[in-house]
Image 1 (tube, rainbow over the protein chains, first blue to last red):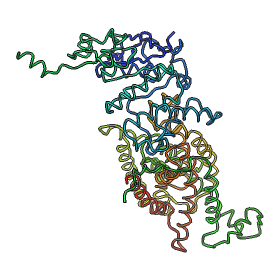
Image 2 (cartoon, each protein chain N blue to C red; image 1 turned 90 degrees about the vertical axis):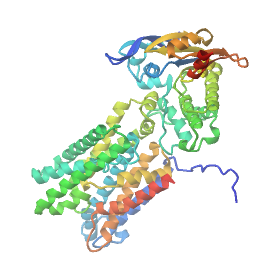
Image 3 (cartoon, rainbow over the protein chains, first blue to last red; image 1 turned 180 degrees about the vertical axis):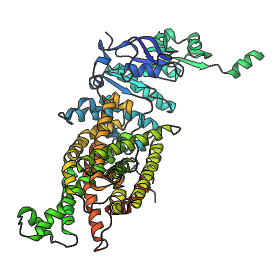
Length: 268
Length: 340
């Protein structure tokens, strides 16, 4: 049984639906990557799966139970979410930020414990931010900051982790490092990750399971080797691109064929 | 003279309850001093005696209990309330300029009270806190609506500008009402700038209990404010029900602001400045900012009121004027520190 599943969900407004009868089984212990053109409903799907938005129709099942019948805190103990472009309050230190991830495990009666402390330290170590742990988040670079947010979600200690464009606006090297971290969370620690990505080659390189969306529908889902093809990129993104296999990594990459290249071909 | 790869300064701040005893000691000291100074200076020993060995035949002891103690208690409650309300508002709105005075809540409360008393001749004291609450909520709603109508929506900037405009307008109406009505001219300083002089202690019996409850609620909710300050999506992902939490925090802020205005008028700058001062020492986690702001706010208003009473003897300056005279330059200093 998959821990997280969408069954026929519609979301958005009656006259302008953003999601249209979406079914999705998120495979356990894998990296699932969601791609699609701007405005196709990727973020809406992620937020609906995380219980931030309610679907108009259909159900989201978390471990077989309707997620909208569970309370917010119970969901937060099982599912971690990193929204797009989060901003930390000015002056908050890295350790304080990561500590907020323990919120779902605390209450008025159950205050800060040793288990909380250990979860925070372990998350800081896993995310590789030990050396900045006592600095203010706002003094760090974009990539370091994103690692802090990832550490916060890790401190939440959930099997399921949903990330909305965690690599946007970062240098390529930083993007790759982050994706390596995500892959290791899934493959070495058994987390289930669902990531919305913009970078197609990064998606093809790191996805165990790739999901392509267009106009509020899932149009293609499967292993990149099976579905990451030039025809599908044309269909989903209206993008003319060549899909090649990199001889070193054995991964698929897409190379856009720009207008200039087409002009050169036409002239010949 | 190069310092090889100087690491960015690591901030060593007191992120625990450990500094509470120090602040409490300062608070008690200022409290006793506040009672001791005045038209007739009393030795601190006499003040302490009045508490531990009260003698109803000792005129000094009677001054302590009947005249000075109520004012000191009002200063503590009002200072703690405004500072805590300001800290909560800064967290919830993610706006470092949020403050009950700057966003129009205190002038809304004062305006409603002035209209009710001067124009409609209301004399029932028990109703004033309710009227102040309605005024604070009404002004907050107007500020929010104006900010929403600005292109770009209710951003920290548009909220601050709308709040400043609404405050200025309501202040102008309060002045006009008082200037046209000679008999109430004396009240002007209370309802325009705030003052702790000659306040009726009965009001403390009405608003004290709900304000203490709101202070406690604010401290208990403080850890959630940090989560909320990271944005609604992050907060919901961490299991915070953001809608109900914001409603609870608004209720706390309105009770504290309306109570403070009913007791002492619209005192400015306390809610704005104190949380920023506290941040320098306890960092940016509201779990610590909120309780420390309450303690520091109480101590600050006691100190300010001491100055208001001794600066130009035998006369007294309005407390609200001193809070602004000290608060404004202090705030400018804090802003400069932040941007450096």
